[in-house]
Length: 525
Ligand code: SF4
Image (cartoon, rainbow, N blue to C red; front, side, top):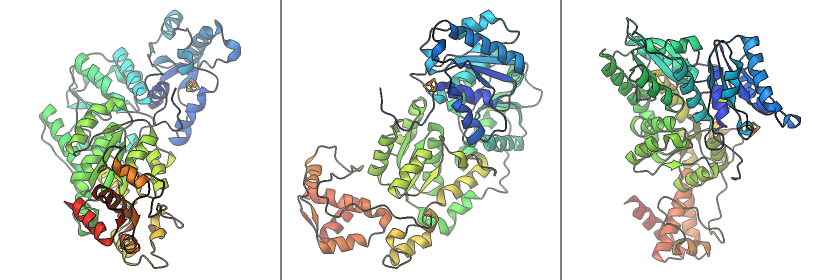
């Protein structure tokens, strides 16, 4: 048992629903209890789809416990086939049904419908939503795709875009555009927009673009074996990654890289003098593995931030994330516990958080700027406007999105210069944090009982340092306290903690102005 309030991912059958809802002419039947249709809302409200998801439930309840439940599943399969006449169906268990004895494979085979019914294995107590989507897509591709002769012109498949995918709709459009500029057409985009008959034609493409490893990698690997199709390893999020992706495509196809950069604005926006204040801003990045790896490269190499924390909630991507984090001298945080994420953010003391809907809430609590880079996301991140993350327009979108929540350079300057001003005082926050935004409360300058939050510079607890602070042996002299207040509010917390750590290490109990500057010099080294 684990006490859980927020979950980054749903159960695996929600992943199966994401694949089914992405597709056309396919019906998914889930063996589940009454009430499980709650997941419909994700599609009709968050993604604002105008049709009910193509998912039916056997909907058993307490009075059905006994042998009836297998019959309910059989009836649900037969009814779904009779009503929707799909080209293919899939059948799976929800978490509650996993505890029952009914075998969806045997039941669907006994029914002997005239179309393929693909049984899915979704271990609800050990795997999650992304696995559910990846495995459902793999099982469908394995059941339907066959080796074929290649198309006369160079074509590729786009793999991994699903329903409820963060910006999948516009990423598909943007990647299609990038490929068209190189003279490459899309054969099938799947599962998003594809029918079972389209999956049967996957084999005629020359190669596959793996858009999202979390939801498409197993199918890409299967097609590599079954249809001898190579698949791309670079995800084109960020200008550098997009260029590497196009180079990879060129290597696969033998076609020269051709780009249309007439509307690529991000590099000049980042290079322009107005962006100088972004240099070295401390950023903490959390989300799914793919988006975090891409975001770190953009943050460090394209915008000039300092990446101070990297992590993902999906352990399927732990290995590539660890490799990527090592490049920035960081240890990847792999957790699905938002409290651990919150602790890591506090310890890293960033000036900007890039994360999911959860990190947005953490950022609000800590009074820090934040932008969303990855699912899970709320309704506002399924926008009406064109908003890709991939390709050149994606780079434009990302620049605007990330810079927007930061206190703009001039405003930052004013906040520091006029900290006593009625309008620009410390607690006023940035204008676009909301009219009545209040900066986070500072902990009292003399921490009496509270132990300080660990930072990356902190020795592992328990230590004499923490003890000394916890016992309240460290005090700030009034003059040092006044000097501390001169430090801009967004870095003051870190300066305060570092000084206290320094003082404790040196055995100094009263922090003077000198101690403050000695600590500053010490950490600058
Ligand atoms: S635990 Fe699983 S089966 Fe039960 S209601 Fe939730 S999602 Fe449905």
